[in-house]
Image (cartoon, rainbow, N blue to C red; front, side, top):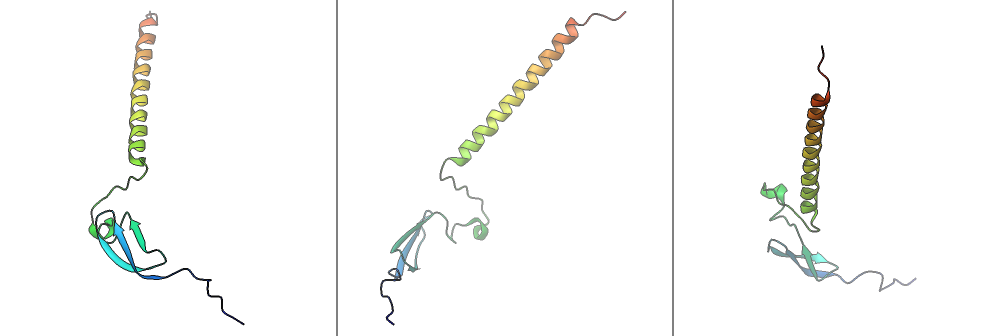
Length: 95
């Protein structure tokens, strides 16, 4: 029985990894170059600093939704107070 020679991908023992923070290191991989957004030099777990990874505008989208919700709450409160003022003016005085 013969062993298949093309069953495994090519192994790169000196694959270069580049992080978004600028850190570079080498490791073994099936890809010759790797680009990552977070590494051990900039990961919040090891640095203790908070870092926002906004790859698709998710933070801005969330902030816009939160602002719109606050605006709608303020408009609803204004309508409610305006309606309450109208009902107290329109109500006949009790004798």
